[in-house]
Every structure is written in C-alpha cells, then in structure tokens.
Image (cartoon, rainbow, N blue to C red; front, side, top):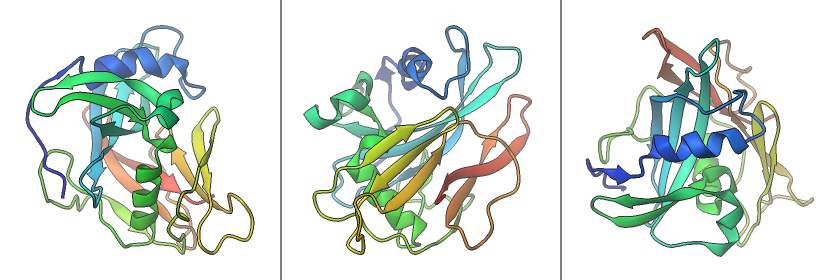
Length: 217
C-alpha cells in the first residue's frame, strides 16, 4: 500500500500543471491557467515504487470555469521511455526529487487502471494511507491485464485521451482501449454494459458534482 506523506513539494503540482496544461490538445484556455485542486483519488502500485494519482483541477482563468482530469505518476528516477510524457520534476519534502509523468503513457498506471475497471483493485483516498475511497464508483467490465512488456498507443483528442494496449486475449495489436475523460462535466453515466469509473469533485461554486473519469469506448 502507498504511504501518504503530508509534506511540501517544490514546485507544487499545481505550479507544474499551470505550465504543462497549455501544451495539451484538450486545454481550452487562451493563456496561463488559474488552477485550484478540486478532487481526485489514488491507486496503489503493488510493488510500492510508483505513486499514482488522479487529480482534478479547475481553471478559472476564462469566462467560465473548466474542470480537467490529470492522472499523474510519481517516480523516484527518470524513465527515458517516458521523457515525452514528463510534466516536470519536484522536490518532495520526504522522498526527495520526484519525476511527475502524464500517467496515460505510464505502463504501471495502465496496469492498475485495468485492475480497477475489472473490479480487482479499488480506488484509494487521496490523503489517507491504506483507505479505500468509497465515493468512487466502478461498473466493471472484461478488460484483461496488459500483456507483458506492452507499449501503449496514446491518442489525445480535444476532449479525451484514448489508451490502446495489448492483453493476453488480444488477437490484434492494441485491441484493448481505455478512455480518460480530460474535461469533466456532470451528467449521466454510460450504460451498465460499458465498463466505467465515475467520481465526484468540487465545482467552483462549492457544490459537489459527479461525472465519468474513465470508460471503455
């Protein structure tokens, strides 16, 4: 289980995201974001090496607030194969220098998301160690674990990121697909025959909202 440390990060995650978000296809702002943390949860890496966090941030720099979902992985060393997905580095008050990556490209993240979407793992509280987050709801599907040594194909669009990968049942390359919903909006969840994960966040007006974070298209 991951141990959550209440400490500082310099620069902060929000400061790193304020520089990184404008480089994304799905960012709708015209200038520098004004970000506030609005929710999220964590997943556990069974090997205890990689931090996995779903962070929800609200950008209030435009005429209307926009809510973004940014899954991130935290590693204690650079991974050359993930250089293209680097959000930035930050000095953690307990663990030292951390490399923060866009999790959609990180195999450890994809493996654990597949476990969650098949009901084999549970979302964890964002702030408390070894505590499931019961506000996160999952309709499990039949996605199988990624095949050993897989390399994901990641496609960013204006609204979401699709992650294609091989599993043991795959007959074609990239047969499995997980969608990360980048711009969050409250609304109906998909039909129950489609695997998905929905969770809450706090809107700019302080109200609680709920929507889909992950789904299988």
